[in-house]
Image (cartoon, rainbow, N blue to C red; front, side):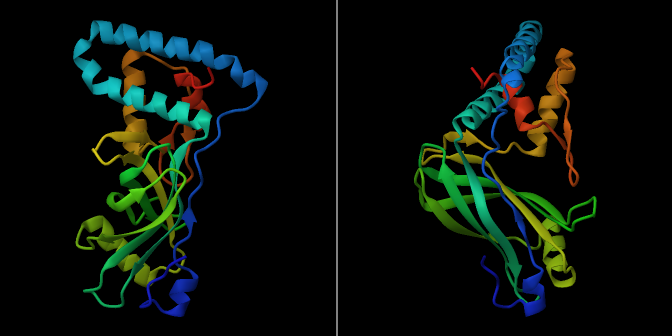
Length: 242
C-alpha cells in the first residue's frame, strides 16, 4: 500500500482501506439455474414490447441493457477488470496535490488503454460520503490481459467533492476508500467492458423497469451508499447462465 511521505505516522495508520474485490461470482446452486430462463424471457419480452410501442426510447435504453447483458456474461466467465489495492493521499500544505494510487488487474481478454474508476471516500457509520466521483485514467503503455499494473492519478482538490476528501484526510482518523473499475476502453476508444455498474447505471435500469412495468427483481440495499441490484439478480435478468 502506497502512502504519501507527507502524512504523519498516526494518519498513515488509519488512512484509507480499500473495498476491492474481483468480479462477483454468479449463483451456483441448482435452483438458481432454472429460474433465470423465465426471468430473462419475462424481462426481455416486456422490454421488446416497450421498444415496439416507444421506439424513441430505444436509443436511450438499449445500450444500457446490452451493457448489463455483456457484464452478466463476463461474470459467468469470471472475466473482468478490478482494483486490487488503492490509496488516496495528500501533502501537508493547502497547495499540495491529492493523489490516487490504484493497482489494476486486467482479466478482461483485451489490452486496456483507458479506465474509469468509481471512487468513494467515506467514514464507516456515516450515511453521506466525503467524496463520490468517477476518475478517468489514460494508461500509458496499456494493461495487457492478465497483467497487474499500478497507476497514479492527480485529482483536482479544487473540485468540491475532492476538496472535501482533501480536508477529511487531515482531520478524520477512520476514512475508507471504495474504488472499482466501472468501464475500460481499448486503444481505439472502444468499450471493452462494463464492470461494476455505477449508481447512475443502476438507477437508469430501475427507471426502465418502471417504464415497462417489470417487477421481477428486488434491489439489494447497500449499508453505506445506495440501492443496487445484486450480481445474482443481474445474472438472472440477462440470461448469463445459458
